Length: 492
Image: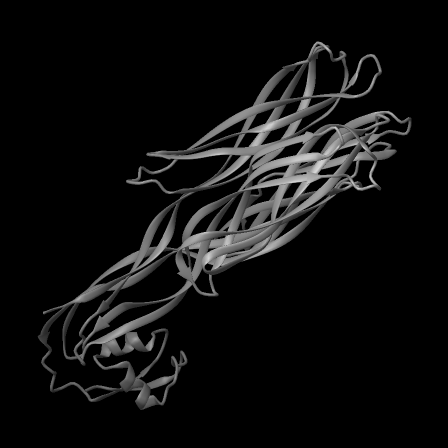
């Protein structure tokens, strides 16, 4: 006789790809006819924009570009000049063929940017972009429960607290602001460049909504009316929510990756800054589930054929946030620092004995006036690291965020969001076939004395043809026995 099993499905997301890809692009820019010849290139800066994500059979791709600016000192010794350009990029990852499209999350970072003159009238800009792309498909974790179980059939049940990724999506929105420099700031003459860095400060899952608030740091660099270079930061708060497909309790959590999708800025005749930006927040919702599975079955009175299968479950083991402080010094005389930018790279995870080593590279880009009052530019690589405790079966993924604010003495705070996960194999019984009754052996003793050893009560009971309850009652046990404990094993 075969027992009927009821199948219950717990939905979850299956990650089919997560990989960082780096790409370099170059662009040559010719100076306008009204611009003086190049004397010295002072530096280059950029803003990454994510334009699109596309899922295709066998691949996923993203496209975007870098709004790039280069600053130079003219050969004739006049006021500094700058050029801007758009440098597009496109990246593609191979993924397994799927019947339908999944969800893509992406974090694009500007790893570095530089410029050099190829002639008195031409600049060559080079950018390095790193993109972490993650492809996820809806999946399921199935539980099997027998509907009617005879009294003589014993079931080994175990309950696991799993944190599973449940759904993913994104919330796009726009920021439109009219901004003025405060009276204490040097008056704006001409705008050189601008960058926007959104940061999530708080996030919460509330029923069928993901609610989050944050701040976008707008960093501008400009010339004052007397021709000196200045920089300023504006903090633009935002609050948004996204509609979810599921309805979650208070244990659910959200991980959010913000990305800038559009950025425009104009200055009117009164010196007001008009900002228009597009931002999208890509989220994954994870929830805790208590999953009960039947891992084994037997009967002391009849033959039982057990059919099992092992399901691989994408379990989130740990989520934490750590702040890393980046600091660097220039090996030259500096008078006044006019501007500092910091570009973090994606962390590199290396499995070490006893844990994981996370390498955190980045680049400082500095504009400063030297001791003689001449404007200079410099870049400086920074290398940080941190050790993480993790077992060999744990995969540690890291996202790096910088709030865009740097201090004039070359300092920046990097926020790392770390997720430890593993694909756990869960064995479970999916079918039971009950056979003929077992005829008792008249010569078999009704009581056995034996050491517990390394076996669990379930294994002892199954092998000796009794029940776990009978062994517990006979030995007054509330838990597993000690390794060297002698047990009374009653045989029915």
